Length: 214
Figure 1 (tube, rainbow, N blue to C red):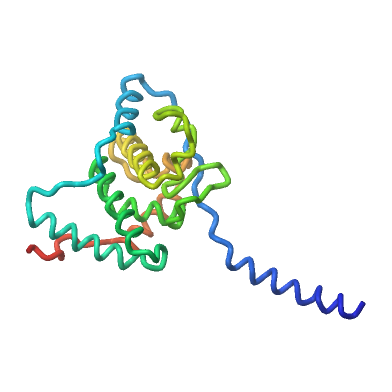
Figure 2 (tube, one colour; figure 1 turned 180 degrees about the horizontal axis):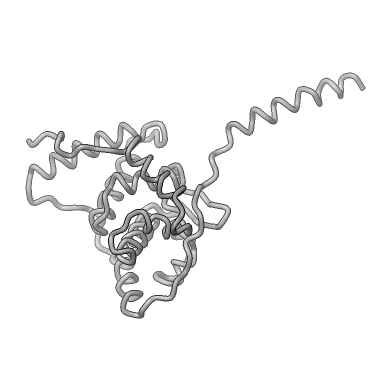
């Protein structure tokens, strides 16, 4: 009897300590489906379906040098979250491509991913949002082939997330605060936009002008 009490006593702190090792819950809210004009839906669907290889070309050698510098700097910042070098580089190259394609700031999207999923490929929020950019599954029915499993594919998730964020920015006429709120399903509230902007500033800010020119 006394031994069972001792074991029960020891089990409590062990369980409590184990909770510290649980991965953080994805912070995503719930993007809301909003009816859209057929032309807008078709345009967004075409962006999702674009099958061209996600490789950005550089006509100017200086742009390529600047990109390589950015890649190295961002890779060093991601080491603690993604230990494998090739995985980091593939992720960053794809992110760069999708952000450039959608006309988004790469550092902003890195901040958004930190807040949304803490860079976890298979993160799922309590609302059901999935992957790096915590995309709601209904988007695969609205813009894709209806298979929500694609949201756990790196390229597909970044493609959906960037296209959706660009769509919200256009809806809000460039107002980043409102667009981020809409992305999170909390338009008009400050908590989520402030968290993304803080991550952008404190963890992912990058001065492109300091990159070497050659």
